[in-house]
Length: 252
Image (cartoon, rainbow, N blue to C red):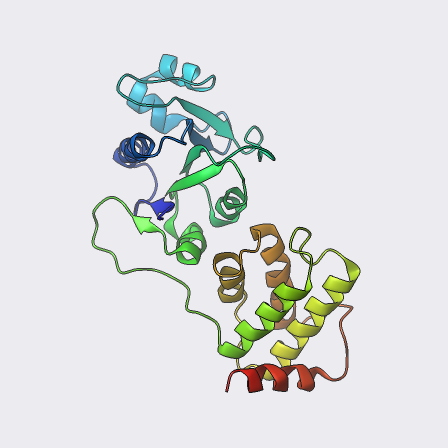
């Protein structure tokens, strides 16, 4: 089921916000589990698009939740400060992300309450990572090639699959033993793989191995550290080639 969408636009495009709301309404009509459409903005001051569409009085009401005529569920403004992850309950929100960058979009991916996301970029390049992670679908009708990160090499996949099978997925690599194993694997890959791309590997962890975004980010940071020429403490110092040889043999 497709759950990630975007509009190929930038800056002040009021029509994009109309389209996103209409599209969300259609999703809600087809999916009875949807209870609310969230208009996700940076701060309470970032409402200019909606003031131009509806006027200031409607905007005030949207902060408390407002059901429009012919729309099946209410719309409600939420900000980075007010929108929290629901620990219990089913996914029942459609979130329209208004000018939100990839880092925050990827965090919202982890929210249990979120079923669909529609991204409206402010600057397209700031949303590219999220679009490519999920091969998000463009909904304005523009003819677009499918945009996605390439898959990592077989060796990298085997390493990440082994790491995934050996750690506590609920805590990522925060436990010292899991952290040490992750650092060993990244050091081995960095030493023997021709290229190690943090975005590609992070995307693979999230999309294919079901990592939470915040935990995948920890792996990305390790890769970025080594790619920048810096180092980190931890992980095995010897025997790295043995890990790499095993992954390579598994790919034959």
